Amino acid sequence: MMRWGNSGQAADSFYQVRPDCSQNVPSTKFKIKAGKTLSVRKWHAAFTREGCLDIASVLSRIQRGGVHPAIRGEVWEFLLGCYDPGSTFDERDQIRHRRRMQYARWKEECREMDSHVSSGKIITAPIITEDGFPINDPLVLLEATQGTSSSSSSSSTTRVEVSDSTNRVTDRQIVDWKLTLHQIGLDVLRTDRSMVFYENKENLQKLWDILAVYAWIDKEVGYCQGMSDLCSPMIVLLNDEADAFWCFERLMRRLRGNFRCTQQSVGVENQLQHLASIIQVLDPKLHDHLETLGGGDYLFAFRMFMVLFRRELSFGDSLYLWEMMWALEYDPDIFTYDETGVATHKIEGSKPKVKSIRQFGKYERENMKNGVNDGDGPVPISVFLVASVLKENSPKLLQEAQGIDDVIRILNNVNGHLDAKRTCAVALKLHRKYLKKGKKT
Image (tube, rainbow, N blue to C red; front, side, top):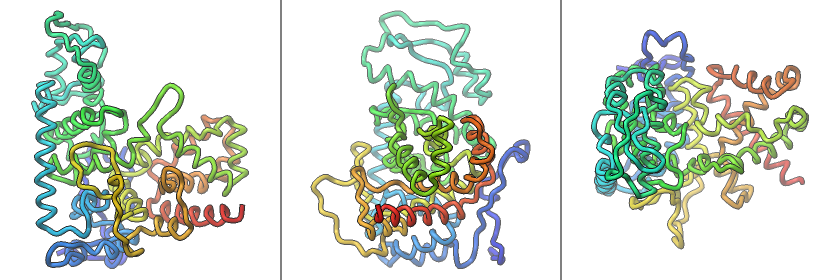
């Protein structure tokens, strides 16, 4: 039986770190606290007999103390909009079955294009040229299967055997997809490798397969570095590969714009511009100082947006931060049952049912109260989270930063020391302050 202490119970046992990596991994600050953390009992009690979820009570508890690790996966499916809280157990079973079948079809489609999908092998070297000619390099594939370090399996191999023109792939979309597979492999072998969970090669294979399938179905974005950091928690929390895929796909609906980069702009440019505006209003001295240093574009904050603070926090604390973010900005209209494609939010022309204000997250309620309706929707809470990190480090940045390298160094020192709960609390305060100042101008 679980004992609850006043200071809370540590959650480290749920995400075990390899002994040889324990000195290099930040300690987890998240504690399971009675009366605050969403417990297994409270979670089950939030459902009616038919299976409808009282989302308001769940959001309130998550915003106070996060989610118990034992139920994180199933809670996240609701937070990310996989399921309507008003759906029944039977309805969700049917939806889950359809989604698992759809994922199986997509995975089989990918396997037919490249036999390494679902093979137990992880590719770490190119398997095709830009012109569509297959590259035969079984040595690299064998090394990847045995889980050797990515440094020994470089994409620049000394022995590359190219097939003849009869095997050439002419479909540009297939060529582009195949060109990303080795990059996915290299990133997978680097992702959360301090965790005992990934000593099991089957889990590495799940991560590679999910990212390979996603890269195929979302052809506009494909695969980009950073996605493995966003997908990894889904593999850890959800046993079924298809369920983990759909959770990741729902997360990418929110974040895929971050990965749309061109030669002229980066995908997070809108968020960086919002960040600049927020700091200019709330801490004009810091904004002016950063501009003087040549950091007025705020590109030094790029990584925080791309991987949602995965580098600044331990694995457990990053999950805690994510679920608080999603609970705070929860919108009950985010779910949709369309499994035929990706990257759609709400069904065009559909009229959402009127929801109780309690069914919205605290951050979202504040936006509604103040009539916030930006062209692309309200500013994501992640922007205010980054703003809170800058505001907390403002004195240090003003005193010590003599150049952009100093700014990066100071922010890098945040790694492992960030407090997820405090960061969310400061972000909410900055949000309210920003809205008030916006009304006055």
